[in-house]
Image 1 (tube, helix red, strand yellow):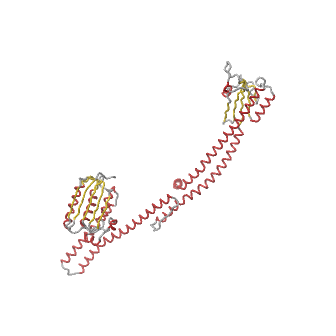
Image 2: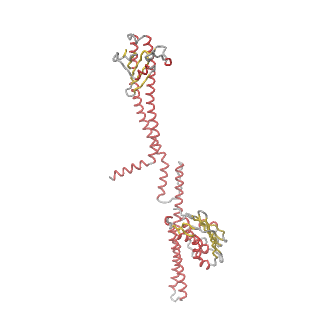
Image 3: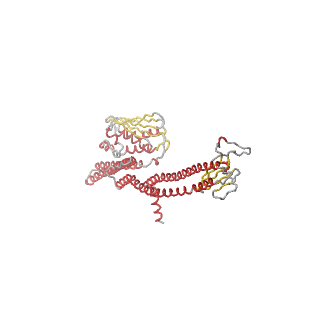
Length: 493
């Protein structure tokens, strides 16, 4: 059972193979025209041969009909000349000749079977009306021709009728049946030769299709080989397969993915290194403080209190780093984790500013809130609160003494905008593109003083992106910075 299933899977893979599909297309492209041409040639041969034979027999039959009139054969069917001509005609065309008079009686049969008998058919009736009739019976392989036997001055446009309704100048009908076996035999011979040619062409086309399919698929194989080479790890080499425009596009996209993965890998390594460093630093500080106390047997109580206060600060710093890391991990999840609800953004901003007021007063920073209109939006209140709090708190912490922070809320029919402007130290222009990177700090010494972890803006950006919004920053070093967060009013799932 397992063997059959494996065979079935292998066949399914073969059918789905691009090489097999190219082979099939090339094979069909070669064989279908060949088959159509074969059918057309055989059919055209038979049709042409029958047409030529019918025309030839009709012409000879008309000549024979004229001779019958000239020798008055219908009244005196004993002319040796005519009988010899009829016999010669029959032998020449391997057919049967019947001469029928106006009373539909056979007065002459080349086979000597039906003489004296009455014979009536549609062809004979039409021929008595002045028409030359010819039919080809494909199944029984014979041609039938009916020619009116009429006077020499007979023309179809000058038909003269007697009182009985019969045409006066038509004296009888010459009915001829000839075999087409020789045409059929020749057609069969041609068909067999065509079959042999078709089989030969099929073999050649199969070989050509296999060869061409292998050639056409080689660039795809090279793409696969190149991908397999980097599957176990990232290399510094750029893959190039420029045989086709399509493979070039695939390789360009793959190289972009590889470059992005290299960046992500490097970012992951830097992140792990930064996390290790940031977590290790407070621990090192606490160990140094604790060792210092332990080494002093008679240390005064004031020194103990000072060291314990420092240790407490380091613990708080460690806790802040861990909390921010956990928040960042949560932000890395998909937007499906958002708890969307309608939120009055004006009230939310007032609440955030109220919470941050003590920090601003401690640094003697003036908080200004300007609301252009009432704004209600569908957002995750917790995540948006965290994002906006980080922006405003950073503006307070990285400000100058006696400075100010202005928060402006506005909206249009699609988005609401929160603009946070400060009078702080500013950010150098060349560093603006890095401020959202994890653990990145513009001023590491100042950040350490105010207890920054370097994760706040990364958390803010992730939270806003989860809402399909955007955040951008402009800054003048030494004068201040403006962060603008633009978030949709309605959440699109």
